[in-house]
Length: 591
Ligand code: ADP
Ligand code: MG
Image (cartoon, rainbow, N blue to C red; front, side, top):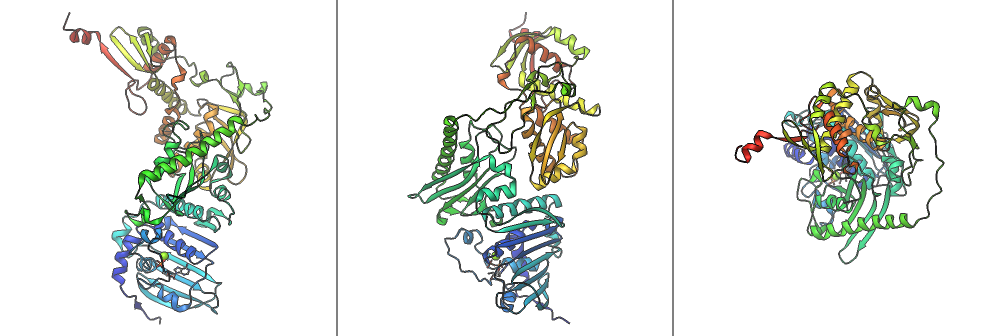
């Protein structure tokens, strides 16, 4: 019979557990950090059910001798002497030596470890803070920790855990960041036996990003390197080329002294540098490492959240803004003076294929490839913009009403003034355009198979594993909506066709955003998601440079009035405002 011994301070540990490890990802972070501290060059993380039912971290670090192993589960037992100035200490001040006992107090916990020079390893099993067993075991030098049934014994905390998909996303995101922060560490993350991502030890940051986020990503980045010795600031890393943006800020990663952190100051400084270089509402991917004296950093929020403030926010902000701006300007300068690359051979549309493009009557011309793509750019037959709104027969009522709406003037390329039999109307061209396209997209898919355009040359697409998985899961959904995306190798795809309403030059960025959206939605996709997608599709469809003339504005008004919901844009904002003749009379004080 194994002797059951309650570890000292069991209750204190359970209370601390709530603070140190509020969710599974925090367990993963604590364990992996310990592995790194133990000098590991290889770490493998495995989890099930978002980490709620099982987490396992294995390393090849220096391990623990039998006594040290038992001691590591005692509160405040730490083998680490730290400088108070260390950011890590500030982050976990008060939690030193508490991670392992805290985790072991709220889970079924197994520690197996063997130190260099020990004959054998030690295996210790703890359940809810009760020591169940301790024995010798055979194993290589290193440590394996398994954490099962997290918070099972603390229902109040278990209740706060989010859906499996949410916890999974946190784990995979945070593991990527840890792997990023330590490029030389070989890292593998596995969920339910499937590899989420893995990377061998890497020599450079670029190589590491390539392993984790895909080679394509690296081609979108340029180096940043700046230092202000006087202020004790240094910024290094890679940041997006001008024009490269993403729909979420997930890939705008900032690290302070090698720790991934959330910092509004850093985020804003980077975004500022891209002002005018990137579409509004989009985020540049960036992987930036700030080095700063730890005493100039406050970790004043919860340690697990890693949100930091700087003693001198303004100074840090200016430094980062200037560093990134300089990198961008240098790149732009180099590009402007660089000799032009030899023109790529033009690919003419093949006449026999033309009928597969839905609007064969429109002129088709080859598109120029994007600047310096890492993968040969797709040379696709570009449909001119006019092709976006197919000249579908406008519904009867619209035609009738359209005649009634006479466009008098256009203002600021954004607004059109109409005279109608009822009064004066001011129409927001962009919103009207969005509404019309939005309903077209929905109508197209409601009618069954969406009309699609086959690409003369498919667009190559490299996806990170989780994105690839979301894509695989929703292939049927995508196909019924006009997207044909074929796999041709692990995480590599080819976009073969897209719905007819999608601009070719926007296709790749749009598909990436779309996959992001599908990823966020998890398994449940349907009409609602398709509406979101349609909304995404029309978000930037109208550009003020489109500069309509009065006749086109009248046609647009006619199409708008043929819509089911002509009064609002898809985001709910008004498309037009009307002041009736009666109202004019009233305002002018009667007839
Ligand atoms: P801290 O990391 O703050 O010291 P922990 O509770 O996380 O506290 O760990 C307690 C101690 O257990 C560490 O100081 C270290 O000596 C030992 N330890 C934990 N994980 C490992 C590991 N993977 N390899 C070697 N030693 C470890
Ligand atoms: Mg620790």
